[in-house]
Image 1 (cartoon, rainbow, N blue to C red):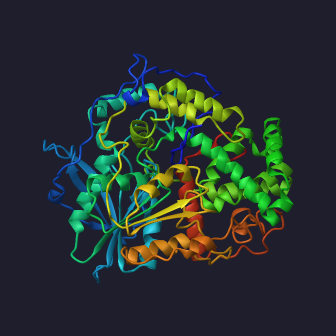
Image 2 (cartoon, rainbow, N blue to C red):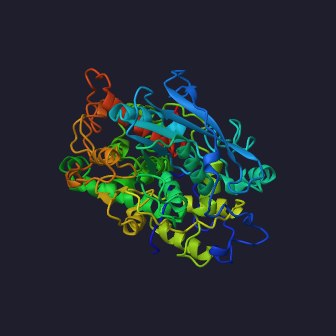
Image 3 (cartoon, helix red, strand yellow):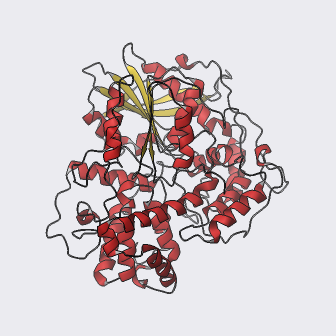
Length: 578
């Protein structure tokens, strides 16, 4: 079984049986598929390393809303004209959008740039609430973010017909819609798809940083998930520009989305294993593996039919919930309630769904096409496989005895074969930099697994480059490493994050990593807000739903934001008003 590398929040795709509807490519993946029936690489290369006119970019910050649509005027935004092709000098421009939260009455100690994941996440939309939290907790820092090319307000990349509200799956492009979408993409973007990749986004970031550079003020970067890949591309091009870099949910430069299903499966089973090791959870669910196996069969036979769920629906919930610390701990209770399926359980599950997925997301927060473009151009091929048939044999092996797998890899392979890929000379290469770094990785991360993230920790071993693994954290660490189960618990990852930002060259005490609390399977803190009951499991209603204090609100809002980056998966196949 190949070592992994991995994905980010994946996007929904229909379940396919192993081997069905697959087009084979006999050429080496490293050379790109050239079969007449397959899409070919565009042949365009992204910019190579070198000098770029980043100091020529003019940025005009204007008052704007921190939270889109609220007209609050608390932030400043800028639509910035960047060269379309960095280093080309042909005069064509690309408009990149950025946002900042500053205190004009003082000089900051640092400027922190937040890089969203995906790839395809828009920082100015998806990270606005976190900008507010950081600025409140660390008033000496100015906080910045931007939308990478192709998402948010940075010339959003889309296929208008195939992603309209009236299309088959809305903003998602189905495999049936892919050929027409590719025709649109090749007609409108065919000669410049590489400008929607990590390299151009990294140079845009450098230009924005250069525009606000202030003597004596540290320039710092945080990248999460796909943002860690973006951060490392920045370090390849500008190894000495930042004073510190923080990455969590770590993607190595030779990442591949091929291995997503394998680690979704492994982590789902690990969560059930942790349930058996927890006295409370084990009493409620003595044999979770057997319960799940039986429940999946029963759901397809009509069990708990008032919810309109089947086995695929449950798998979809589990894989989505396992990305985020707060929701991961709810998985055993969800299984327990679905299996019992009393009337109060149905009400609790409906409450759970609306608490986590009931709010509308901004359609510009995530660009499906940017995910396709960067993901299938830079993040699919892998040295573990000599050709596409080997890759498919690997997927068959993963799915042969899988409990939670949904067949995402088969569909993704078809998207890969059909997408007009670009090539980039920096793909699969490593940054060489002595910049201070804080690397935070969850051992329970199914999206960017520890097996591969560890290569990043082994590569960056400088004096002030800190590698930390958190045993009970999944894809989020800063907000997924509580030191107790109390509502006001401090998170170890956040403690290290803030300490590093204040002094990237200082000593970093990481002793709290060993003190992180195991998953809170009981759920007395969040049960009232999510299931509407005293805890996650039983049906005694909360006598009075307490007012949501700021810390709990931040955690729930962070959970909702994380789940939105796995778009729509739990909704598919659910009826009865869901």
